[in-house]
Amino acid sequence: MTTAVNALFQPFQLGSLQLPTRVVMAPMTRSFSPNGVPTADVVEYYRRRAASGVGLIITEGTTVGHKASNGYPHVPRFYGEAPLAAWKAVVEAVHAEGGKIVPQLWHVGNVRHMGTEPEPQVPGYGPMEKLKDGQVVVHGMTKQDIQEVIAAFAQAAKDAQTIGMDGVEIHGAHGYLVDQFFWEGSNQRTDEYGGNLANRSRFAIELIEAVRAAVGPDFPIIFRFSQWKQQDYTARLVTTPKALGEFLEPLSAAGVDIFHCSTRRFWEPEFEGSELNLAGWTRQLTGKPTITVGSVGLDGEFLQFMVKTDKVAQPANIEGLLERLNKQEFDLVAVGRALICDPDWALKVKEGRMQDILPFSREALKTLA
Image 1: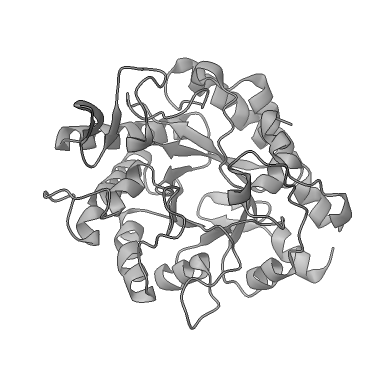
Image 2 (image 1 turned 135 degrees about the vertical axis):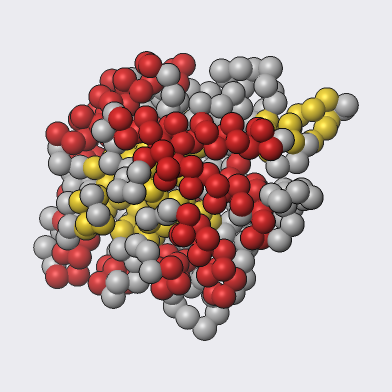
């Protein structure tokens, strides 16, 4: 193992969270949990990644206990006796391999369509009401709705702690509910949850505070955010380092321990005049550890594979990534599609077997390998 690669396999510690390596499995929706309950295949899927040297697994998005939280079929739930028992089995399998694991807690918000399981008559919930042909397709959330969703996240976090998870990640990115409150286009409320970005951040801040209160001071909270959203990959929530700092500081103060900074390409500078990416800027501005992510280990970004395609993403050189990690631009590295197609990605990198890493295609999404 070269000195540069060695940085990826150094331990990381933050309070009670002790990771054997800096490799993180990024959260990726897989939709292999019928009725919201992870199967034995899901247990094995995560176990294999931990066994190969992934230090921290962030699970696929798991829906919290609110009637409108889900937007897709067969995604796992993080509430109810059967799903939580299944997740406990995942935890035990990952821990047996020496890895750590946190659930990504998720509410899709206004992305939800009528007819979606488990309550098909429930419309999407979002900051603003939306009508189509005289029918409410998005319910504009009342203050009571907001408090109910916050309570659902807090309960999910407490349940994660109870079944032995090593922390939680709150999904605040990609145009889902928490992110919908951040954006002026989707949040034109006139109460304290709307207006300037500070007010539009109030929902996220109160949610983080409630999670922190539920789990106590020592249980790690990761917050995932993005400058882009799935409805607009070129969108930017903030355009200067100063504005980014003003956005992040209240979230940090509310209880975030680690920021997961979602980008499409980790190597791209976030602002002109600096080579720092989003994770680099976030670490510098908040002083908190950060996770970088975005097409790590592959030569084709994920957007190419959102539609039916025969394209194949080949393994890519990670020297630039390792150089940034060695310079402590960020602390942890999240790997996405490369870990879907090759559960042994981390082990092969550690052993210098880059030529043995499997390429990624949409075929990999059809099974849990």
